[in-house]
Amino acid sequence: MVRGLFVTGTDTNVGKTVVSAALMHRYGREVLLRYWKPIQTGIEQDPGGNDTAEVARLGECRRDQLIDAGVRLPRPLSPHLAARQSGITIELQPLVDIATQANQALLVEGAGGAMVPLNDREFMTDLMSRLGLPVVIVSRSTLGTINHTLLTIDALRRRSLTIAGVVMVGPPDADNREAIEQRGGVPVVGEMPLFQPLTPSRLCAWATVELDRDGHLLEILGR
Image (cartoon, rainbow, N blue to C red; front, side, top):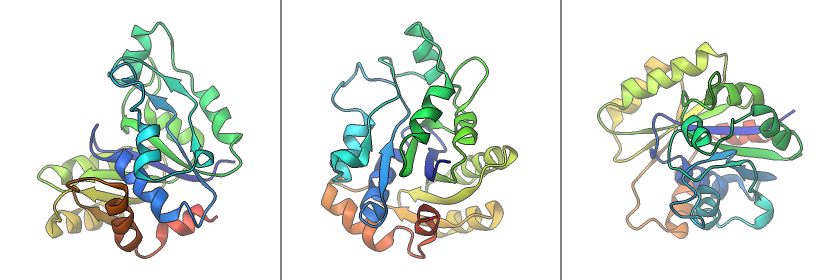
């Protein structure tokens, strides 16, 4: 049985990696928690700057808090296209095996959004279903986020996936937050600003005080 949380987004580059680092700051000292990016594309652009390395830097993670294994693809494309151009097919079972062997709570970050294709028949939601983890949705706070977030919530619920909460990224917008919570029936567990500059210390300070104030995610991680 796999324990932990799965971090997905309403879009690519919405802030999943920074939110993952914030969650490591928030709970990495309270729970035996390991960050894992099962599928990473775009490695050829910056071989040393993948999301695992970025979470390690921003989240000030120890080496034993990271799993750096899985599918690693050079081209910055959707996983199914990046795999096709590399002459491989992404299979889910080897990834599930990595997760089940971890023996710790996992913070799993997806690639792209919830419905990104992984191969000719499966999507990121299929990996979520195989792992069986509650999902944290990362969304923007700005115009358009209600539609994108509610569509993501609907896609996850249609697959019987549990939604742990939403983290909104950008300038606070009380109306958008209220719409997502009331119409989506999910809690917003954090409103993360766009840090300028983005540093580990500033991210830690925000996460410690502002992220998951009610401890809802901690309850899930501690099960």
